Amino acid sequence: MNIVQKKLKKGLTVALSGLLLCGSLSLTAYADEPYDVYNYDRWGEAIPSQAGYLAQRAVSGEDLGTTHFNNASDIFRDHNDRFYVADTGNNRIVVVNTDWTETVKVLDTFTMPDGSTTTLMSPKGVYVSPQNDLIYIADSENSRVLACDLDGNVKICLEKPASEVYDQQSTFLPQKVLVDKAENVYIVLNNTTNGACVFNAAGEFTGFYGANRVEPTAEVLARYFWRTIATEEMQEKMKKSVASAFSNFDLDDEGFIYTSTESATQVMDRVKKVNPAGENLFADYNVKWGDRITTWYSGTSYVTRIVDIDVADDGSINCLDSTTGRVFQYDKECNLLFIVGTQANQVGGFSRVTAVETIGTSILVLDGDKNTVTIYDETAFGETVHYATELYNEGRYEEALEPWYEVLKYDGNYRRAFIGIASALFNKGDYEGSMKYAKLADSPYIYNRAFEGWRTDFLKENLTLILVAVAGVAGGIAAVYFVLKKKNGNNGKEGKQS
Image (tube, rainbow, N blue to C red; front, side, top):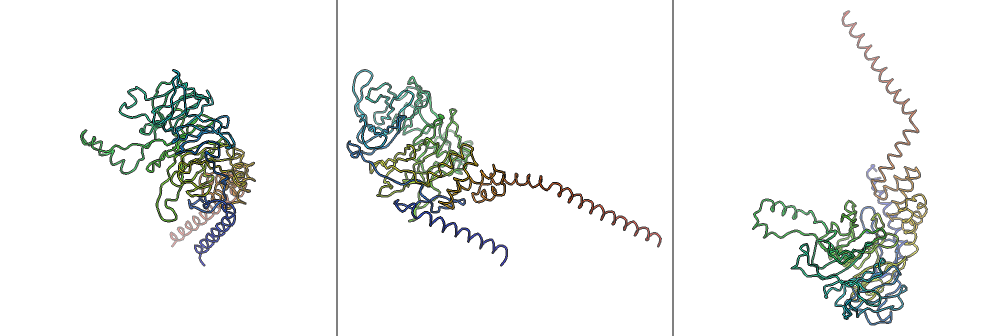
């Protein structure tokens, strides 16, 4: 058996063992779910995994003591841990208590600043500002955003801006709304690719923010080339390449805005973390947001469409895929942690997902067809992963080492654990161990750092031997050179004598 065959046999044995271990560990994890729980290994292949979350219950409007939701499209948790549901088809906002057991308030009639009353028409987004306690509602078909208190008294009404910057031929149909710490209002519209429409705290339109980039595809590059040499008439006939619009956004504790894009053609900037200057801080991250699989098991192809995004209290990023009904959860560094949900009729499965929200260790998903909110709770595996991740993200790598080993007891192929262990061992100075786990994680960055550390230690420990060896080799070469030179010299003398 040659070396290649031996390595191949060894690789297959390790892979088979890993798959068997993973499969045996995961059977109980997803037995209660209406779908197979999976994750991705270092080669980007989907493999069975433990469940980080399990569906506990699905809550309807009737369960909350109100009428049935109708085409509900958004859900938001405020700073008091109350929830707000944009019940689009019923033209109302339903306020729900923390435990999802009863309705606190139904907002369907509002009092304007002039004393008149008004109602909503297909509200599609809701946000509550902790700065002023106002509820911001994207009142889509009324072409406005209302900001009111819990009693429905309207304090601010934002409508289509009369500005040269805003195309006056375009409609103003707010889809989602967000408010930052300075009380600037960001609005996702249904008809612009310029980014979010922004109003300041005084209600003045200030422009657009955070537009997505255009994909540099071959078609786009070719079109750009032809535009450089085409006449104005030819350019008018060419279809312009534009980036896709946002589908939703969220705000983290530090004030960064995270955006999602549902378009099937937008791969670049599908998920962004945007700074105040409008720059995407994830631009250089090599992350494939959403599913890496491109076909259902039946063979039908599909594309991830991220309809909503939520940044949890611990900084984890939850992306909701409307195509598959799945939540893809990432840590702060964009490492995939868990994949939750699917399209199914049972609890834990969905028909048409529209929004995702989190509270503590729970994930909530809104279904616009079933008109229910499904609540997922964290499992023991999920708790262990999150604890290890928290320690890791705080730079406490060595403290995270044992929790990461515990994670591998649940799932022997969990890539994020390999990364955590490799980093912890690196910080402990165990460079050989770090290289081993970095290789398992397919992390060239950690592996190269560990190799440099190992090489430095090797040189320090063996410097004397290396110098002696070098001196010996140099002396040997010099001796051989001297002997050969002397021999050649003698041969030359003998030749002259003859």
